[in-house]
Image 1: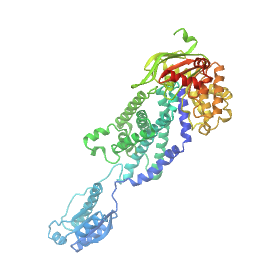
Image 2: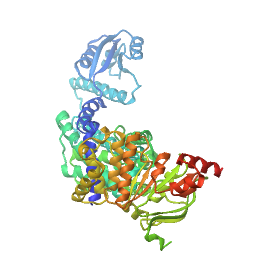
Image 3: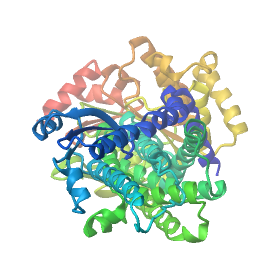
Image 4: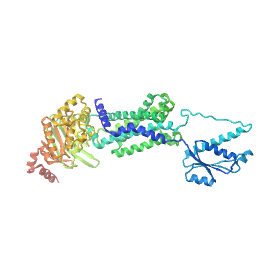
Length: 367
Length: 247
């Protein structure tokens, strides 16, 4: 016990003297959440739009007025011709164009179904889909207005209500996820680099000539970095509350328990990386490499269920995937522990395996 | 061998270490008595560091047997670590801790209570002369003082033997001489000092000396006897003559 205490105390003394840690723990969560939390969004707003009016009738003018009035669209005016509208899209000045053909009103009066053409910049498929959705529902709305003026028009109306995130704000989805990413970065990379640095400096060789065994040395690293991780996570929680006004819907104690399990897996990974690398650059590279993988396969940007099945299986090995869904569940839905047991078991199990593997690789002798 | 263990603290026979095809240490045998200053002299790559690392339980020998402080180097290397002091070639205490914090740390990992560490370090600081510097950041110390601090850390648990791997490399001549005065003092206190060096003048200070080349021990005797054997005045000449004779 005394030995572990000495190791932990030494680590904290070093951490206290390293200014970079202060920034990483207390400032990074705020900066990252403010910048990334505001930048990462899949909401589509202010879609630049032009309308080509070849009909020039009261009906076509009404369509124009309605699109102009809605803040979702940034109405850039009337384009002379479809060719002109296409050029504007090519130049990236607008993302969408609406073409109202000649005879639109006439056909409508005769009871036919006139067609309105929509041209969309499809480079960003996600935004294009969302834009088309908005345009379609706008059109439906206008049509409904006209229909209700006529006799005998009946229909069905769908009133959606979104649970847990009523305004479908992407910050509610992304901010909790960001906390997980920050924690992953902090714990995996810093631990790996810290230990490899001791290898490079030769202080680890000196330690290996003293009585503590590999398990004690590893516990002496796990304790301080777990504390650092928890402090950083707490700063992240405060930042999420202060900057974005996002409260935690679930139990804080459960959130911390899950965080602890997650940290076990990321620290395990960090220590394991330190046992397979011998320079700080190598450790940094391997840590980055695994971080990008963990990030892309976490469900942060793309929901896991949208990934191809083989990739979905791969995500089962990613601790961040579990923590990502745990964070969103607890943060937004207040999900209790009994529904999160599989995630808890996965993260805890991975932590155990990684730490054991690292301990086995962490020789008491040099090679 | 069993009988000899009582008066010798290091005893190895046919100790060998291979890295792949390369034999770094080739069947060396020697013993070191208690309180002795035993020197390993040789050029870089002669196998000195590898030998020390095997004796300290840092490297597994490829062959041979031996005991350090009464423990078998093949099987009980974990126990050896608590009984010896080790100072590696490269300064390897923590530069971002103060002198006192480094000592507290090493006291702690050798299993001393904070009180014991305090008492023991006061005693060592008295001998080694670090008292005035104890609140200084280690990074700010000159190399000579860093070496003394490292020596202090390796002595904190009062080991019977200390292994010093080129303790004076990169240290100015005056500090080197002071460091050797300390080594003598330790020897007077009954400690065994196992030291490697490539400085010939330092070799003169050893009670007994072995000259290594290509993993083999060429000569092992008292400095005076070696000079007599080769009929020369200095260790420098002994060293060159022994290498020549070998090749």
